[in-house]
Length: 421
Ligand code: LLP
Image 1 (tube, rainbow, N blue to C red):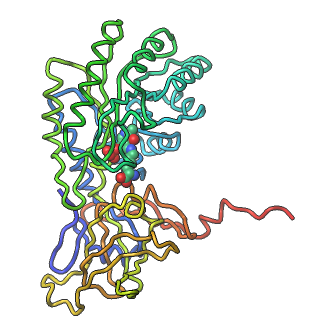
Image 2: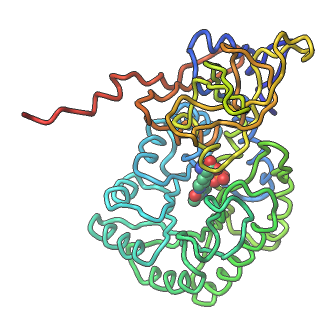
Image 3: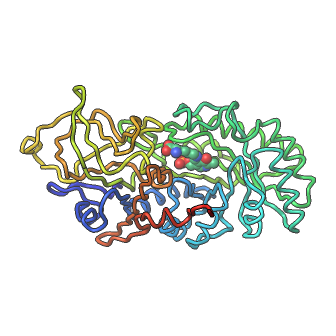
């Protein structure tokens, strides 16, 4: 299901024309379809309905509390990577008993707060972290639930910045090291071994890397069993890919069939940490064409969104679909001739672009939608060039809710001060 669709000349989000959202909230603005998020979450959990499982949404993909609240009400748990994300989940009414804490560099205060809140599991990524967890749990008179994040050394065949399961990446530990960490963990009265975990990368479109990873986790679980260590949960991480352009990701049902086939005869609970698949195609970045210009034979559409609002294009050379919000149904009747444009932002860097070489018939003042911006969009935005971050608008049918206001200059200056004279 995709909440963005065309009706006549206009692009709609659910029952509202995007031009109306732009009139009310201005541009640039992130716009999310609640129904699309809900459908993606339900598709995911339903795909595994025949097997004990828990979906723990990866908060980093989109951490707006309205979205966390929606997912919490649908039964989601949460995968967090910071104390800040923990506070967001709690602020949104999420159940700490369904929170997993991932990340290679957890700080003492973050571990302490997570212990206090009784989260479900720490996904431990090094022997040093395990020792630190024992020390803090001991100091606080707590027992920490743990899973070790194993680096299964599989090639997820994705962008190098988001491949995390190769042995030379900073994530997790090799299976041999995990084995000795589990043996150590078993000795501690302040640790409770609950599971095993991996996360091999992001935007993965095929089941093969998951199956290789799962096979390696299962081999380790069986070996642990021989040491009398029992593992109740297998967390396969996130990474399920979506269609941005012409990718053909396996539908989640097909991922599920392949994964569940390997689980035949086993009874460990499965855990997943999807982020992108739940929210990416539920969001767009709405932007307005500010200036059209041509330099050296190239045509540039300078829009009011920039790399500070949405960095995926510049940082990963990602391809995002772009469409005109008001597109005459008959393209030939467009008063403007179509040309090939680079969509760039106002930031003082040549790398500040949102899309390259797109055939569009546009004029200054036109509204554009940058699609698939619901994941790793707003959360990666910054104040570079002292630009206020864009608002986030959640749509539910014919209702619109501003779930984060546009940042003002006062918001930015509030934390700064002149030094004393
Ligand atoms: N679990 C862990 C431990 C992760 O590190 C990640 C993502 C996820 C789950 C969720 O992965 P997903 O299902 O969203 O693929 N900013 C990049 C993506 C970075 C992903 C980092 N880790 C992008 O815009 O493509």
